Amino acid sequence: MSKQIHIKNADFIVTMNAENTVFTNADILIEQDRIHSVGAIDRKRVKADAQVVNAKGKYVLPGLVNTHVHTSQQLGRGLGDDVDLLTWLHERIWPYESSMTKSDSYVSTLLTGLELIRSGVTSFAEPGGQYVGSMAKAVKELGLRGKLAKSTMDEGEGLPEKWQKTAREELDVQVEDLKKYHNTAKGRVQVWFGLRTIFNNSDKLIVKSKELADKYSTGLHMHVAEVKEEIAYTKAKYGVGTVTHLNDLGVLDRNFLAVHTVWLTDKEVDLFKKHGVKVSHNPAAAMRVLGFAKIPRMYRKGICVTIGTDGAPSSNHMDMIDEMWLTSLIHKGWRLDPTVMKAQEILTMATKNGAEALMDEALYGSLEPGKKADLIIINPHSASMLPLHDPIANLVTAMHASNVESTMCDGRWLMKNRAVLSVDEKGILKEAAERAGNIRKRAGIVLPDRFPVQRA
Ligand SMILES: [Zn+2]
Image (cartoon, rainbow, N blue to C red; front, side, top):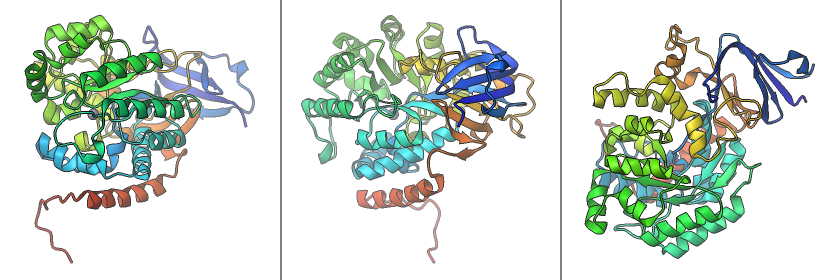
């Protein structure tokens, strides 16, 4: 089989390189797992047995990067609708997640991966499930790239008994995971350190996690300044807001991925800039309960802002294309300014900024010679996406996941012409539906009927 793939005659190749070059009527040549050339390629180099893909009428884009997705919560989709935060956490999510087995986590990650592949994601960061080994196995099979972390908690009220751990225990298990799974699946699986939230993480755990992330040249993924109550809590406990406290601990740095980041003062935004902290903006989860982060301000200051979906019980759609669209809307709405968060900025957040936040900017996030062949082909010929008066804006403001025709990661098609090739989609859907109900029963979660139901 040929090791070359020749994607030819694409209407638009949106490279997201340093100049944001868009090629029209152009080609990409892939050799093994890398992009050999893009734009006007040397067609004489293309071997007779190269796999040829005609992309006439289509777009080619870098694979999208989802910087915050809870793969272990996917089987809990629908458990968090229309309830307040404490009910969500204590009566739904904690009981559900703590009732999951290793194999549940594996199937949950497979189901997440299907949704990611179908919506054009090739790389993601998982903030913390319980079983990193199960997630790693699934990511390997899916063919995606993942930065996986364990959810760590060493203090806080109301934690399920099996989650009551010391800082030492939480650190040890993460180092063990790292030794087993870091850089597996040809480097596509990497292990990061996870911090759930400041409500559940001691200073000791936070500082030591940062030390270990530095030691192993990996990243640190934490929910930061997520809800208003969090700032009241940190002010009462530490005298300052979450970000100022993290700065006082000396952990804000280039390998720190801060998620949500809603309740920051302008001074704290400056601290992010000063220390090169990466931000994951999750607009759907924000609109549900968190609030509106100062994303336009952060972006203008040059902070590396990225996009994530959060978990299925928080925002239901693990779909980066929906999140791009929401990002384009919510800041215009609360700022009453339709000129903020432009489509090209949002594409930057979802591609090359995502790669930078995952510390992989040298590998992917743009379509350039020498980079990994992580890309997607978009077919815009649908009632919801045509016409293409403003083709770049359309990718953010009119595209749906169903317009993603093919997804490639590491030079391998994970989905081609809407058929997922890397895993057995049908089998996963069946197993996921069965397991989800079983976990809910084990966790003792009963959802009230919303309409009168007649059970036959
Ligand atoms: Zn989250």
